[in-house]
Length: 170
Image (cartoon, rainbow, N blue to C red; front, side, top):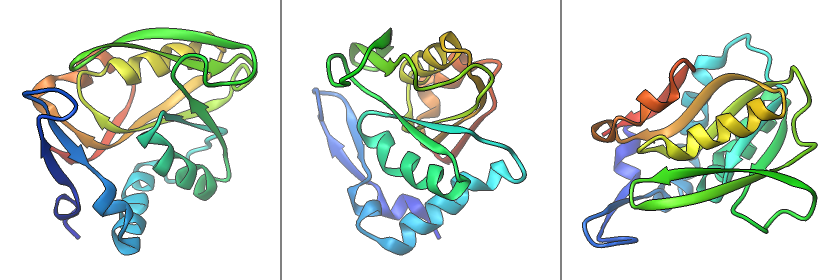
């Protein structure tokens, strides 16, 4: 199945000059969603995962499905002031600006094996920020998973030395 057929390009969103990769057609198709989950799991055979971290908001879609399939807990990483308990934060660069992520202080226990998931690897800032949060809490990052990677932005360079897997590369 060619998942690129289920991803729509939106010109000039959220800013002029940006081509946004819209995954809602993929999410609307149960066969494409199932295939995507299978691909994301393909690199994790016989790997113990305790927690799956998903980035707000599009990372939540597949991170929760992956957590369920891996019999692992799901942990949301959100924008500031969206989580109700005590948090730690990490700031990072985006393709078109800067932002901050937060995670609950008790979301990851020391030594837990963590899978990080987001929908797209662009500049690598979001994923690097999530890695920083996980490691600050004592978690061990097993892999960073992405539905898509925008290779021309070289975000994978920010994720050295972590194992990285992307289903689709542009």
